[in-house]
Amino acid sequence: NAGVTQTPKFRVLKTGQSMTLLCAQDMNHEYMYWYRQDPGMGLRLIHYSVGEGTTAKGEVPDGYNVSRLKKQNFLLGLESAAPSQTSVYFCASSTWKVQETQYFGPGTRLLVL
Amino acid sequence: RKEVEQDPGPFNVPEGATVAFNCTYSNSASQSFFWYRQDCRKEPKLLMSVYSSGNEDGRFTAQLNRASQYISLLIRDSKLSDSATYLCVVNEGSARQLTFGSGTQLTVLP
Image (cartoon, rainbow over all chains, first blue to last red):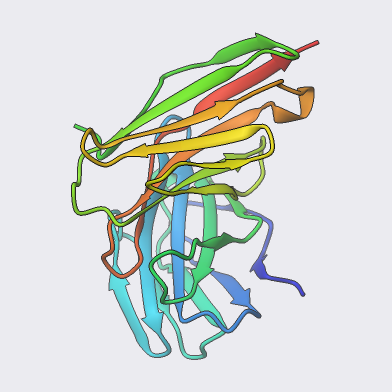
């Protein structure tokens, strides 16, 4: 059981380039999330999805777009990367139950030059 | 004011010591509470959920005080392998969104 996987693990971009981060989960979870983690800031929610075909903004959505065309996948796009988007990106998934926690992927380290 | 605040740390303790972490949250409507552990350059992983009656898992004890909006984690008989960052996490009930504290770094010394 793979749980939550993320692709790629590490990427270097130049300012202005675009890229897509892929998150996949095999636990049949309804909810999926994208976070970024910066030193001293903790994890901050970028976007989330409560089901296939639905997405919503989190705390820091600017500069990012997302799509959830299939229940098991959640894509995070950067249309025009900026150095401020250098961070570690984590994807997570969960069921709809309030008492259930979230399960995280291994993270993607992104460096924007 | 941060929604979830933790002890600033870092905590450096000898093996075998008992260490306690504290956390406060601002949203009284918060519905569920967790402690996560995050190792260096790894993803956060659930350590334990926190229940109103308090709960224990081996050397780890978590307490919740809803009236004071306060959560604690106690680690007894610390091991070298306990060295990590501990994240206090609160679910405010909205679309299952979690709010994370900034974390407290623990180093257990031989």
